[in-house]
Image (cartoon, rainbow, N blue to C red; front, side, top):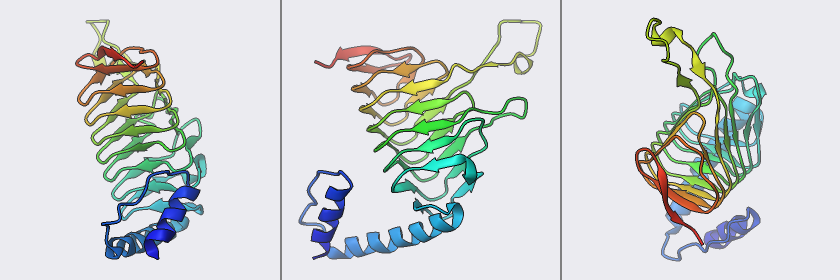
Length: 225
């Protein structure tokens, strides 16, 4: 009975996988209990139908657009103080113990984050979004992912690096991308559609559609045909 209801809910949300028949009803009950609490907490914090975990902070929620069934797991900080709207598409998920930092310094109001439909990121991830981050639809990402959309200028040896300012080219990921754990994205990089980023890669360049990239710094390892 419970499994049947869950399966129908999955289909309605666009998820086409079949539930493993070995999963006990007790687990479904735990999920319902947890999600109900998260939904109540999310409505109190944002006034919207958002699933929010325990000890999660959402700052300046008036500047955040939440799609349908967004989940923000426990112990996460979402900084909505940005010059552009923070956008979470439908069925977006942000893993536990993650941090979205939109404005890193009072000298510059940050740009923020846009994250497309059905995209998700794992636990302990960091969005340094002052220079702007755009993530497309259907992007699945592991844990310990970090985005750094600004880079320090150090060209003048007579001036302290911290006083030389930063670049803010931004970071852009296309649609249908798999990002392995512990990947680092640096300012100015972009990854095309239908691509894979290997675990542990440091991405600091522009890459086309349909490739597997990896390494430090990342390079094309394979063409997806």
